[in-house]
Image (cartoon, rainbow, N blue to C red):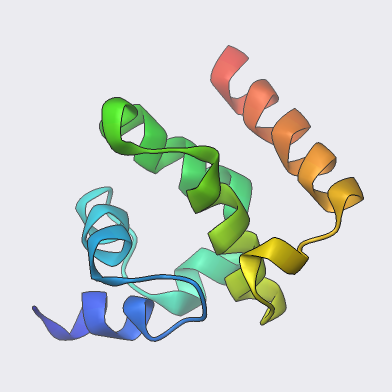
Length: 91
């Protein structure tokens, strides 16, 4: 594994497979994940890997940004993320 997936996989909630998929959609590290936000990163990965991407990745990304376990992402934030993803999907 190259350095970029390792840096992404070092974020809370994200493992090697998620990191490889994130890199495959052109995201080059944790700073870009922070810059784009969880909804945009999820949308890009889901668009490229539709059969292997679940909402758990969305929660994991947000948890990584918040530095909390993905189970601890508040429901209000989850609803907001779902709305953002829906907007991105319909554009």
